[in-house]
Image (cartoon, rainbow, N blue to C red; front, side):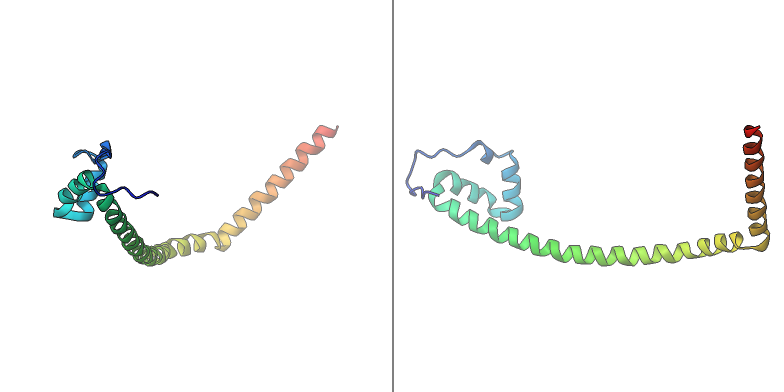
Amino acid sequence: MTDVPETDTSFLAPVFLAPVSGACVMAIRIYGDRAADMIDGLMKRPGVAVPLVLRRLRAKLDEWREAQKNYNRLWRDQCDKNHAKWLQSQAAAFRQLDGRQMRTKTLLNEADTAAEEVCSSHVLHTRRRR
């Protein structure tokens, strides 16, 4: 990257520094009340302002990444707790369904149904051979 002298007037501020652009909105989020001074400095003396802004942006990026790591830990813990609660709430329904399916009457009905299906398929199969 080439250094732009502080007094270089050939440099024109890019359009993205217009007051309604997304860059200005981010500058306000990062610099707060001093955002207007920062944008003014970028337009008037970019050789001095750009390195300072880059240093500040890198520091903010590191800060936001660290905050994201912390929030990811919190969110993962919260999701694990909620998943455990969900499983616990489903346990009663599973127990009730399992109890119904394992009753002697239900098992005998299933066995009879299966036996009837085997017999009917065997009868159909033998009729087709003739």
